[in-house]
Image (tube, rainbow over the protein chains, first blue to last red):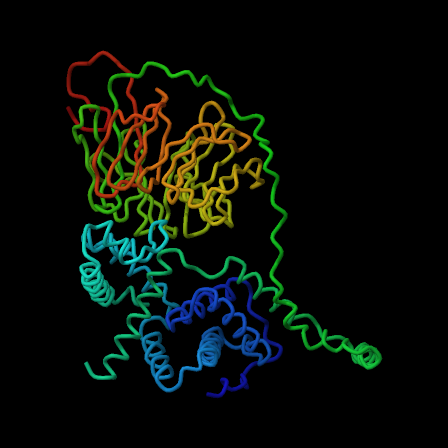
Length: 183
Length: 363
């Protein structure tokens, strides 16, 4: 896949973005990469690489939305180049990209994250605890399925089922968030 | 499920995993923005003149390897910003008040305010084990403080809000410009100190909602204003407890305390620290030496030293009060207790007539 085209419409004299804009864009690209499956440290590296490319191409002088699109596409390219995953990886990246544009493009995913936090607090006791333990919420390190099973007095398979159900409930709850929260 | 549906399901899973990770505090490297900003600034500097370029090129031809600087100039901007040198561990808090640590006889009437994260509620339990007040729908309840006026100051992690709720259940004050706070403390002057945990700051907010003081660059799991005006912060991102003055200068610190969830300065000048992953509560002296500890706890998230010398600990499914010789003298079962605060009431003669009790109920 070729790198995104040079930012031809960039105005060389246009000011480079200030700190809040950089932070917002970096955070958005980082979140996008995490959704593509990048590990946290890997996402840090790729955000840097994408910014280097954007600087070289003058893309950071574009309007913020266009600059972000450039950064996102560049990050996707760099991520896939690292993974060398072939057709299936590309198709999966496309599917994630589609979801990003549907759910997160407008606000960088902040609305979804807020909705998730609200939805987490609405899960019932045991399902919520399983999610919190599994993902290391509220100060824990993420626990293994066996550890979660021990903590909840369940078999590991029971935890698997509980987690599948909890994830589905979260998904439905997030999807059902009010339209005004979708930016 | 056909291949397209499988692919979409996998994409949905990745999206949810990433968001759950972020909700759990998996975030970009703290210095990432700084590095990017440095790169942008370096890029924005005016280019050297043609004469200088020519001179540089001639020099480069003369010295093999000089050109590598030019090639690497962009990359050089990404050298991580050096951390400031660590502040010394000397306990500067020389002016910290040293109070008489001798336990005093306690009043007979007290309540314990228990914050139950999993059940989204706060319970006020009296000395007889009776629930005298209960608040529901406190989403992600992480802290609750009983104020002298009978109101409760509650911190809602999940909806990023701090609220003062009166005995009728009405919100009389709130502050929402936060990202998943853990703790709030009402100060004597009416301001509120908030550990805005995932906002990466500790702030002091006036009753009008104006931020009048802030300390940035931390992930505070706990913050409290000390009698000397400094602020004690449990900074989980650097595994330390710090005492900062009004100018944000670190005047004391305790390093090497991973997953520190709570830190309280005691009247004797020592610091009581709750270590969730170590399943322990430790009392450190000013030099960082452990002088007392409770171990084998169940993921504690809060501990308070009571005026009688006992220690009240919130640990998951139970709140327990331990005597100095580590015997359990009181306990209360919960679903997921994250914070417990004890309040004692002066033994005053009962008055007749219609009045409100200590927790705001009409008698």
